[in-house]
Amino acid sequence: MFLRSHQRSKDGKRHTYWSLVETVRTADGPRQRKLCYLGELNGNAQARWLKTIEVFNEQGESRQLKLFPSQVEPPPNDSNVARVLVNKVRLERVRQFGNCFVGLELWKRLELDRFYEQLVDGETADVAWSRVAAVLAINRLCAPGSELSIEERGYPDTALDDLLRIEEGKINDTRLYRCLDRLLPHKKELEKHLKQRYGELFGAEFDVLLYDLTSSYVEGAAGRNPLMQRGYSRDHRSDCKQLVIALIVNVEGFPFSYETFDGNRRDVTTLAAVLRLVERKYGKARRVWVFDRGIVSEENLAALRKRGARYLVGTVRKKLKEFEREMLEGGWEQVRPEVEVKLVTLPAGEETYVLCRTASRKEKEKAIRSRFSTRMETALNKLKKRVAEKRLKDRNKIERQIGRIQARHPQVADLYQMEVKQSAEGLQFEWTVLNDRYSWQQLREGAYLLRTNLSGESAEDLWKKYIQLTEAEAAFRALKSELSIRPIFHQLERRVKAHVLVAFLGYALWVTLKHLLARKNLKISPAKALSMLSGLRSADIVLPTTDRREIRLRRITTPAPEQQTLLARLGMQLPERLDLDYECSADSEVR
Image 1 (cartoon, rainbow, N blue to C red):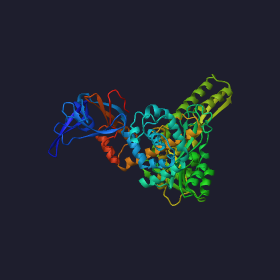
Image 2: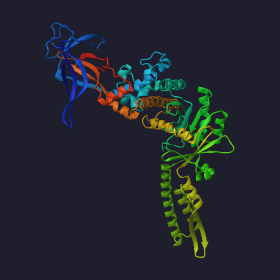
Image 3: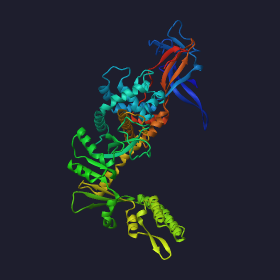
């Protein structure tokens, strides 16, 4: 690593510019890669137009320094001259800059800086609580982890302290926990603010709402948290207590609201509570609710109709049997190469049903059925052989074996009839395929049923509206994968809820970035964009001087072409420099 000079003529004068470069090996041989641009150092022919730089000393006092390479003789008797030992220049305090810079830009575009300044910065504090909130949310976006991991690893490795102007040593887990306590009471105001900003930035509308649920488990006993209970775990961690999270987004994935429920709460029982909360926050409106069959019940649909709400929902598969005749008849409409739909209106009633079938889904379900049927028939034939060879003579034992086979293959157990008979030769075991059930199983493979009280819409429009439910599923994938909402390490109920709130803030930033990328037709995910920009660093260029002093210039590394293009397309301009330049003795430690 070394300083390289660049010569340029401007206004009839010769200028020398310097950049910090390193030698790297490439397929074409050694090459020099520019890390940082330092700027101009003075030459001896520049006495009348010297370039200065403002630096701060150890007492925080500023002065203008004139930097010269050590081999250049500066003007005599000038106390503000510093002669740099060019061959001893080094790079220190390298931090991630690009990804947290983008996170802060997203934070500002959503005006969350001003939002939290008004709500939580009323009291005097060493660090404004709105800035601590930004640390929590941006770390959740860029490097999710616990508050302790933020203090020990996440925050020290980023340039957030420079971007947010936070003094060294001021961010610790205690301050982060206290900030969680201050953010939670403002959940309702946050949801309304985000709804308004998404409307202003992207023209987002919230007349169609997608509703879905997930769960997140806690590490530890959580004995003092009644929210944490054992229940159906979508995380396959039945050994841990959990809570249930209900999320409401619009058709583009913009968040509308979220709620938390006890970990043993059944999905179907959450809708009534959510409807009341939404109406309390936003008033009654003729919204369209879209959710899957796990939340569907006659009571829930009746409650929606009573409120004047409209809905488009999935339906349990056993209800398909009522439409067997319609499934056998024609009139299907192809909406995609492998998707067919059919509108069915019942003579009595205010609901419409949409029959749907998908070729790829049919092949998948057929393969699953075939695999389990083969296994079950193999097991049944083995049992039949054992009975025929008199190796199994007790009826009770035979029936227990039948029960075990059925339990191991519940997906296809109802397709077979099994019988233990008494004959002159002794007990016999026989099994047959129930052809009517088998035929119905084949017919319904790849098929599913939608149910709605919307009127005047085609089967294709209804199907497309329901398929948008994948946006809610994508939101949960982001929360669980990129934003790591699980596991939860907090034990107190208010801290668990605040943890979910911070994850919700992280998702708000994530979905904003997602739509900014889509708006510019950039075919990359938010995770890919953040990973690409994480290679953009800030660092201190340390300039040792001939008088045993050091000048530390905090700079941003030169972005690679793809990083520069990405930032330009997003409309984000990197600062030319970080105004954190210091002059200190060589044995001093400067943050």
